[in-house]
Image (cartoon, rainbow, N blue to C red; front, side, top):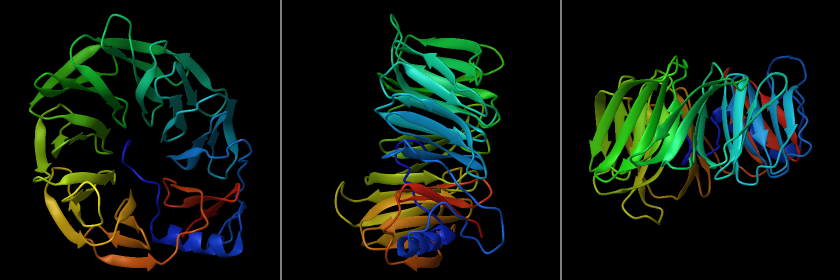
Length: 355
C-alpha cells in the first residue's frame, strides 16, 4: 500500500480524534479500560511521516527517524537526513529512505542498521521477519534489488538488465521477493526465493502498464496498472483482474487478506466517483456512487474510513455505514496498531485510543 494509501482511521479512531480536537489531550490513553499510560517522545519529528509497525509505530522526518514500541517507548532512534521522506513499517521493524538518495536505514529494537546504495534507492519493502528488499539504481544496469536481513547481512542482489524496474515487494513470511518492471510490450514480474538467489517465476503482462506492486497478508500479489488491478498467487499464476472500464483510478487501499477498496472516477478531477469493494481475486463485492470529493481512504480488517471534503464516514466491507463525523480537524497524523488500537499524533504529542 505504497503510493495511494491515505492515513485515516476507523470509527473508534475518529471518535478519539474528536476528543483530541476538543480537549487538546495528548500523551495519554483514551480508552474505556484502566490501562497503563502511553507516552511517546516526538521531539525532532515536526512534519514527520508516520507508519504502523506491528504493535508500535515508526516515524521519519528530515532530520530523525524513530521506532516505537507498544507503550510509546523508543526502541530505536537515529539522527539521519531524509528530506524526501519514505517509510515502510512492519511487525517490529521499519525501513526509511529518501527517494533517489543513497542512504537507507533499518530500524529495530536496539541499534539501527545503515546501508548505502550509491545509485539511489527508489523503492523498498520489509517483512514481518525483518528481511528487506531494496530497489536502487545500478551502474551498467537498469537497476538492482538487494535482499538483506535487518542486521545488514546481505543475502543476495539481483541485477536488472531488461525492463525498467519500478517497484519491489517482499512477502509477509519473508519467503518471496517480487520485482515489477515496465517493458517495451507492457510489464513483467520476477519472483525470487529469499533463501537463495533462485528465480521461481517470470510473469509477462503484455499491454499492461503496471506501476505498483503490493504483497497482501495472505501472500498474494496485487498489481496496480493504469487500466486495471491484477491479482496473482504467490507463484505468479493469475487469480483474476478487475478492469477500470475506461474510468480513472483515484485511490485504493489494501485491507490485508480480506478485500481491496477502489475509488474510480469518470474524470481525473471532480467529485463524482464510485467506491468499490473487491475480494483478493478481483471479484466485485459491493459498490457505491459518490457525489463528494474523496481526500483519502484507510482500511483495517473489516472496516474502513473514507475522508470526504466535509466529513468522514466509516463503512464495513459490505459498504454498510457504521458512523460518520462532521469534522476531523485537530490531528497531524494517525496510525493503526496490529491489535486494532489507534495512535493519534496531535499538537506535538501522541495519544492512543483502544476500544
